[in-house]
Amino acid sequence: MAAAIFALLVVVLLAPATTAFNITKILKKHPEFSTFNQYLTETHLANEINHRQTITILALDNSAMSSLLSKGLTLFTLRNVLSLHVLVDYYGAKKLHQITDGTTVTASLFQSSGDADGNSGYVNITDMHGGKVAFAPADTGDLNSFFVKTLVEMPYNLSVIQISAVLDSATAEAPTPEPSKVNLTSLLAAKGCKEFSRLLSSTGADKTFQENIDSGLTVFCAGDAAVKAFMPKFRNLTAGNKTAVLLYHGVPVFNSMAMLKSSNGIMNTLATDGANKYDFTVQNDDETVTLKTKVVTAKITGTLVDKDPVAAYKLDKVLLPRELFKKSAKPDSAPAPAPEAEDAPSPVADGPTSDDDDDDEVADQRARRGSRNDAGKINGGGLLAVGLALCYCALAAL
Image (cartoon, one colour):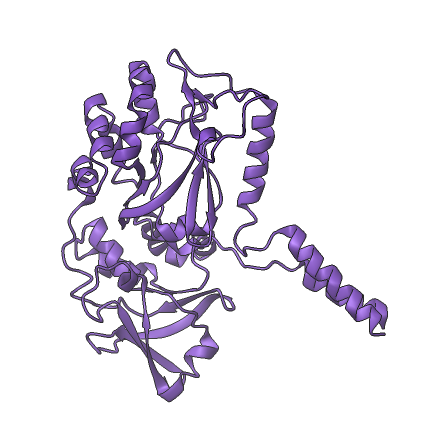
């Protein structure tokens, strides 16, 4: 008996705290949904879906997608339409047929994007009995799309079900301006990053940022006070290194705030190039997100824009790459510095420093391992302690 209880507790202990999924790989097993899968990727919705803890996808087969694509919608408008087909709650087949009072309204990613007017981003789900469940945008009430079958269920994280037709929504299909037409430097300057924006323009680095907008871009811009304090060091850098520092503040992938808060780990940047890593580590603690470069730790203090494919966040410090900067020397006899003192680096104007330090490699490996353990906010040691305590209590009770 004791052995059985112990074995059961071990199974519980080893079970994963959260369920991770990759919607692209899941749909790849169903070729009749290849077009739907393709456009989830092209619109960047797949990445957002994969970062959600609870989601239901109303999948459209190739025939239904062909009907949608025949409307000639732009990729950015198509994103709105498809985001209406991604519900931010779990609806498996059983739940669909047990809806309280026979009908319910639930939010979609289109609603959470902020582009939906009124209740146009909500979806009406109605159990019509006889095994029939209908779906429609909440602002139309036209129940003309029906549950067909379940593709995947991972209670209560992911449900992928096929519906018979596209959810027609005039709001979702309204023309959406292309993000590349947005002037990034003007946007940053208007939102409190005027000095950073000025440096982008004066060095020509703004062109690289602008070219990456359509494929996805995240910008971390230091506030005006932080940039002004950094200028003496910036002026001492070579032209190439000035550009590298600025590109270090851009990531060639869209990262919403929700994504940043759910992912710890290393990020490459626009400055990453072969042996020159130019990466930093993202760490989060509840609502606080920090970026660590091994030279300085900067905190996100505000969101300037968070709308796929562009996200821009304000930092309290300039990001200093270890390839160009070193921490200031701290003599043994010197008194302990203030908290900010360790972030006062000295620039290396003539080129990058060595990147072969053993401590750096160890730290990198630890950061990479840590990035895989953040989803449940419970580290392995804590989970092990809980498991051992349960085992002890169970055995002691026998």
